[in-house]
Image (tube, rainbow, N blue to C red; front, side):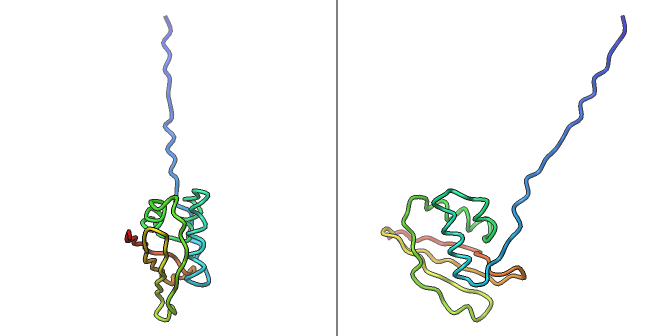
Length: 110
């Protein structure tokens, strides 16, 4: 009886994070991040934010977040305050070669 040999090739795929886009102002970076929440667009959010900031934002799903105020961004970093009915958040941005990126988001419940 003839023998047969079967060879199977293993194909590995990796999903890379989308490249950072960067934005012209800190507020524009924050607006982009907040704009991704209603449509649950984590990939879009990651284009202008670090992964930890994206995770922190999406933990706030369902909250009516609004930007309260931002500082002047004079030292290549910036901070903005966001609010909802049940708490306040601090969002930090940094100027990178590609533009402004959200680096962190900390939420404090009321």
